[in-house]
Image (cartoon, rainbow, N blue to C red; front, side):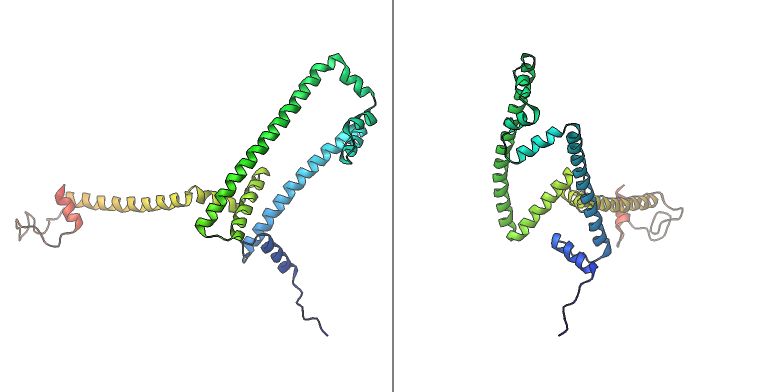
Length: 247
């Protein structure tokens, strides 16, 4: 019996991956498809470059002193780091710690350690406090807009993506558009355009009023030099006539 399952093309397979990764996008035109692929490549290359840099630093350290590699391996395997120091650097390490000339440097190093631990604990406490407030904000935001759990999760995932991109020094067109809308730049541009149109119309009205006031060299109908002059107001006067008379 023949297999009726349609085999998807590589293009369709890639589109399925993109739509699964970015469920809020449809990827219906090549510009959006290849734009997202390009953004993903930039992200992968930046992450890969960071990994290569860290790998090179470790390789250089291990090459300079192979004992450091063994010491880190011992720690990774759960061995006591103090015993690891002795095992890899010898009991002389204790003599270094007991050296009176090293006491000030050891005290300074310990001070840095204590401060780092204290700052880390403070950051953890601040993070937990902020996260509690953020969760309350998210629940209120979701309730006010009648959003589903899936929708609010997508919003949070998008924001986390912006944070990750910022750490990597990467800002996509989508993120920039979001920032412009958040800062009302789109509205400002539209308002500026509308103000320009109004200013242009006002300029034309002013020019017409100026010409009407100065005259164009011909006698105005119903005026002092024409026939049918009357002291009564003229009927069907335009806004320009009324404005000229008011000057």
